Image (cartoon, rainbow, N blue to C red; front, side, top):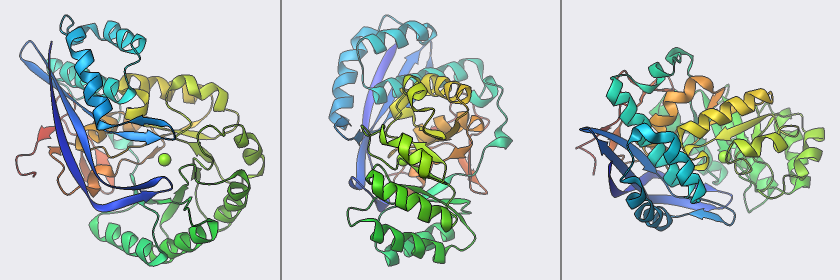
Length: 350
Ligand SMILES: [Mg+2]
């Protein structure tokens, strides 16, 4: 198969601040595979968790090394390709782009959208949450207001773990709650709390009606989750602590759910395995995103009927998303009836 790589830069309407820093713009990578006159598309977007970084340069360099190895393969040989990429320790975001492209190609070959190939019920897709980054209380309230004007919001995901401390976290959350009364809230600390902060905050968040908390402790401090689980009245999800299915068994006794992202898992194939592994351990499942455009978020939307919670909002905060894919209806990100991923290039984008 032939592979073409295109870099594209996307800008956020509102820069997003989390416990680790602020992002206003990313350069993502569009991967196109072609075989037998059919193209399959995938996306790799940069992300970092602690010391683990997959930058745009990392992605581009890895693709340059991998492309010559793939020329002898067809997308029909996906099992062999996936094993080869794993053996060569190819970054997960690159594997995600190739896996997405292979699925897109297969869907176009048979003329069906992926959700139909998998026999999934599109109507069971949950509303997506929308994200409010770390901000002043007034800034967070303004962001909530903007989201409410922009779309039918089912659930707000509020980023806490502010470097300014948990008093600042409390004030910000109360400001969002006051701005959006009656809306469901959940909190993502992005590993920004100590164990003591997390125990205190989980009790407080439960008191004010927050639904659950994500990644309270930093990646690498998973041993603290056992104690936190004993004290927390809130369900605990992990994100940064859980990249793929092999991470799930040793976390399963101390958490209530996992956040699956295609860039961490290495694509739809492993995301599917993560869902089944999580279910086998009685865990709940969320699908999330990094600075992904509509291309990667549409890929996740095809699997979305398998998730309890969805956080697929990054493309909704882009001013120059070059793709058109899943549509937003009543707060839900829904894949279309077009074959494969059903993503098209938008000529009107910047
Ligand atoms: Mg998260």
